[in-house]
Image (cartoon, rainbow, N blue to C red; front, side, top):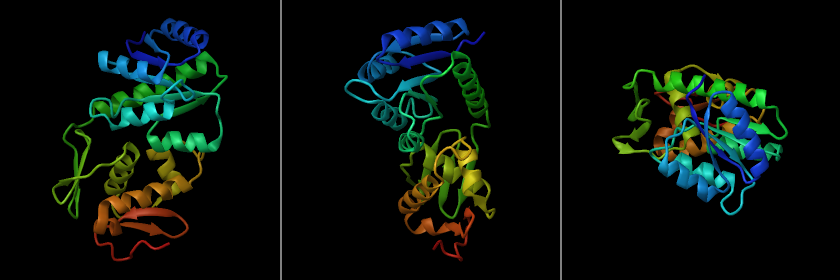
Length: 237
């Protein structure tokens, strides 16, 4: 039985009750919030392992709740699964760009949702139990994996969760070309479910934040990207 604590953010009280019943039956401890504002209050007053987040909420919608979670120092790496009737690609892309961990379109089976939650929590535990002082350094860029901080020439870098994960992966695999499909799988944990152009958008924003050091992220024509300390090849493409 799991001891994980889940926050269900869903304005449909019948669906929320059904989710709570099935997830508690599976061994989870569940709390419910009917709006984005209630969700933020719950987060401030408790400790959670994962958030199940509807998009269509009264007042503050699910995207804004996700944005606030990812910007908070205490909850920034809290796993988020979006539950929504909106299955359009643009919604999935926006969700993943904001840093969600999974996207489940209604209607869905409780068993499938439970399996997805278990997979995310298992992956999250592995992440939290990794070497806490793993630090990546290259050409003035410093990434502290355990503390989830980034700096350039000693000055803090403000990165989104996906930008942090993308830069960390590229630096770990320095000099090795990574295809867009590999980046989607290893950074976003999805397999071609969202348009690979979202990778290009994130790389562009990351280069902008890195300033002159952005030239170290090279475009590999027809494939994807790589991190190179010299930056000799430029990044046109």
